[in-house]
Length: 215
Image (cartoon, rainbow, N blue to C red; front, side, top):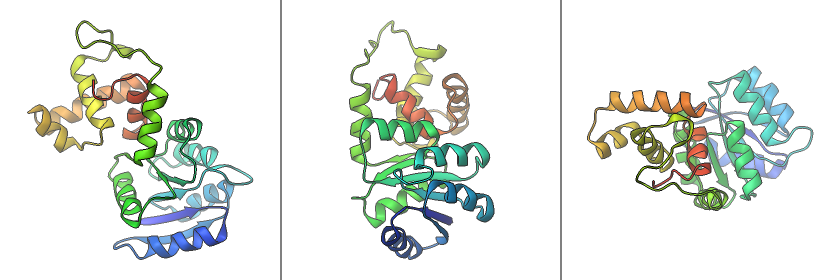
C-alpha cells in the first residue's frame, strides 16, 4: 500500500511517516505540507491512500480531498486531524474522505483505517461516529412501520444501508441478512445510485443524515 501524508506541521508529518512506514506492507511515498502540495503529489506519485490533515495553509484538507477524489477516484483519503466537530466531519465526508480519525488514534487505528480505505470501506473514529449521531439527532426518525424512506429507498435497501453505516463488510451483511453476497452487492449498487453516493463513506454519511443507522 502506497501512502502519502499531508500535514502542515513538519514534526507531525515526519512522526506519522515513521509510524506509518513501520506498518507491514505500507510504503510512505511522499510528505506534503499543505493541501495544494498534496493534490500535486497525488498526480505525480499515485498513492493508494492520502493521510490528510484538515487545517492547512494554501489549501485546506477538505478542498484537497474534494480535488483528489474528483481527479483521481482510485486514490482514497483518510482524514487524521485534531478536530471532530460537526462541521469538520460532515465537510470532510461530503468531500469524499473514506475515513476520519482524530490525532488521539493509535497505530492500530491508523492501520485499520488505511486498510479499510483500500478495501472500499469506511472507518470512523468513535468520537466521529458520535458527532454524526449528534448531527442527525435533529432529524425526525421515521417509524419502522409505514415510514417514508428518502430517495425511493426500499425497506431492504434501508436495512443494508444501516449495516454499511455500522461498518459491516459485504460478507458480514450477507451473513446477517441470510442472503447471497451477490445480492448484497446488487442492493449496494442501487443504494449508491439512489443516494448519489460515490462510496461507502458517502453512504455512511447519508445514513446518519437521514436517521437510518440502526433503523
